[in-house]
Length: 106
Image (cartoon, rainbow, N blue to C red; front, side, top):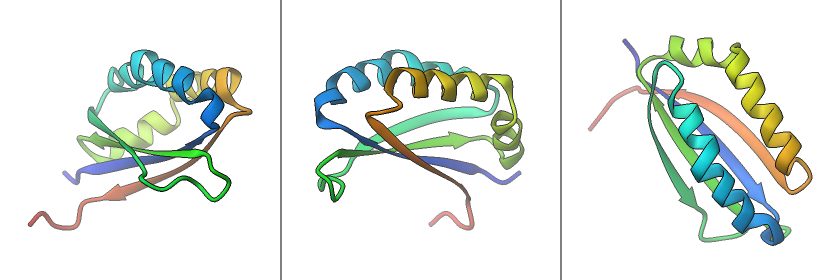
């Protein structure tokens, strides 16, 4: 079984950063972690802002296996969570996503 890491980079307008962080940490991340295969999430804040001054966050979601990520990506839960994010913070956030698989642990 190959571990997977779901990496989400989020740029946030500084004027909305506090409200976004509350929603993200209190509601969004706990809902994602309830999905099958999600083991943990580590949230990081970049020490440098995005080029336009927006705050940049990076979330690392660890999953039990790549298939868990595939199932999540096509699930109704993923669609609902993305829609909620867009509805609440669509004009004050930008997202990029990638999925990584572990090659070797040192």
